[in-house]
Length: 211
Image (cartoon, rainbow, N blue to C red; front, side, top):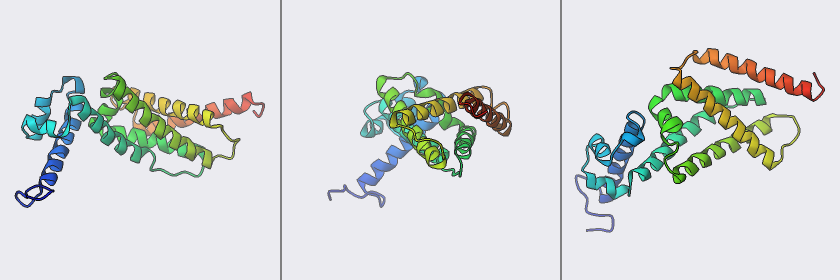
């Protein structure tokens, strides 16, 4: 016996535990994103993973602990998608964010359900995890917008407010679109979003006396 555990079928104990953990997480993503978190049970997760219940508690103390890990995986995937785009101007950066968010939600309906619906209102702990990831994505998005903009500098407090506004608006747009069954088509919705942003920018310039 070594400190890494006795090998079995060519794999160490730690490798087997890690593989079981990944199976449970994959089953959690699938169940939470189809049946819903509140309808799931430890037994159902283990059945989907093809594992005995005792292996669930080898990695997680509760179903909520699994939800937190599932959400970390889902939001990492989303973050990579929505922050992957470039853009030389602030409108291009913002459009890339919205387009990527819509595209991710449509291409990943199971993960999108976890992010958009299943983590909401579960507990104060999960709510804070949700908010912290939203703030993090908002901060990075605003950093990119500031670098791409020639406008006046924003204070840190105003950058935080802008990040909250943009992430909140993006979430609401995507939630409404998913609930509607992806209607209108993505490109049509993006065109409408472009026109809406153009109007908002023109209205803001007019209010400042530049219109």
